[in-house]
Amino acid sequence: MAHRQKTRRPMAEINVVPYIDVMLVLLVIFMITAPLLTQGVKVDLVEADAKPIEEEAKRPLVVSVEADGQWSITYDDDRTQRVDADELLQKSAAILQTNPGIPVLIKGDKNVVYDRVVQAMVILQQAGAPNVGLITQPPEATK
Image (cartoon, rainbow, N blue to C red):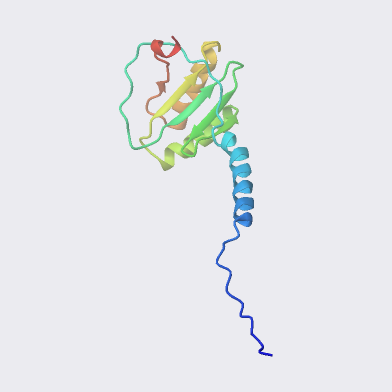
């Protein structure tokens, strides 16, 4: 009786189940983190037919004045932080010292008391901002 040896042939199929599991985990992670990356402050801007500022290589320092009068500061990494008067002065002074010549902009809600916008402008001036711009919304954007 002849004995045949059975040789095992290598399996040529790729098991994709682990790859699908990894893909689904990554999908869930991205679904959770994507809304966190686009956080901001809800501000109803004033409508004005103003000329846009020239595009510059430097990103602006933006101070938001919300409808309830709270201040928020946003710079470079697009993280928005709520600040009070002292924090606004310290953080904006530090940013302006390390990045001289960057544009400084205020984004004020149209329902906020005008005094809060002026106070923010005064604090930015004390921090060393040579000039402060106001962000408005074009009238066509709301139609």
